[in-house]
Image (cartoon, rainbow, N blue to C red):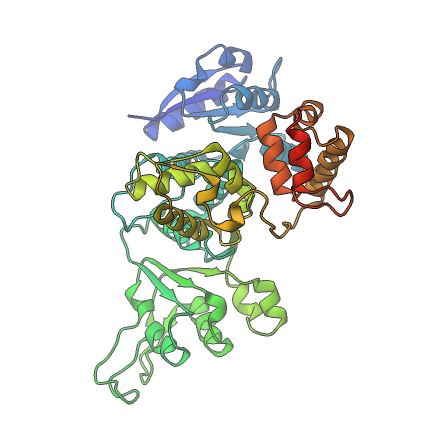
Length: 455
């Protein structure tokens, strides 16, 4: 089924140019000469909107706001001849998927539209069953993950080297695979090397290869993994585990593409895209002299894989996916158990989530998982380390705490005063450590329980 696009521009000539360009690219394209006219259409029937910003009656930014309110999943590209940094920032803040300045070339428009649909395909992966057990997927549709998907799609089909940073268990290898699969080199090799899993004295020979007789035991020539990735993507996992000396050789390869086997003299040129992952703070590693700054500068793009605590709204979706993947189609998580899991910060990220679920499934005799079936650190009332909070979260915690004091810890009244439901309040109470003794009030979880029990 062909993708449908709606073009909105008060300049009829610009409308015709856009329409003709996209029709030739194989899309179904309609056009409107005002945002007011566009809003009278059933916009959910379209896959993409391309709107000018400066228009009479309703401008592009106001139009974008209305689209975000009524059709939040519908991507919008904004176009204008009067671009400014402030306008661009406002457009992106309001949810625009991309921004194009006039005049533009047909190639630029086609490229932008292609990227939007690549992002859409990546976002929809969680709705499809995995083809095989060896093909893990990104799961999640939160704003944080959607922004990460956008970043991946924007840099997928270029040759620029990419460094993916993030904590363990955040899906850095998945991101590298996505970069490869969304690129024009998807039919070429995707080669992975875990720098922390191969002994230092073997890593160089594995990367660059060796000639017969280069060292004791080298009874045959070995091509090397870099050369085996010719035309494709070469993924270096845990790159901060690589020694500074070997980092220098990798730097030279990334500068000129030259590969010379150990013990050999012939130089071979290899064209691969280098993608690397690091779970350590690279800038801190540079300060400590363990990572070369000149190698860092060879990575044109730096991406950050978000930790699970930054998109916990995806947790139910992740759990549902994992249970279905493991064959537990009739098993459910109780609301109370889900609240406990949402209140937890998941320092081990998705990898820890998989471990917790597997442990819970083995220990639970029921078709429904309750809080008491979870590991002890998740159970209500258990002493846990208070999570690190941002200034905004600290302010929210203080507001909830003061309101609880005002209502004598009556959760029903507190939720009414704060304008949130009781379920959300309970989740935030656990999230901010207000169930245990608070240093400001001396209140304990038992104090709260006895008080709320009277409400």
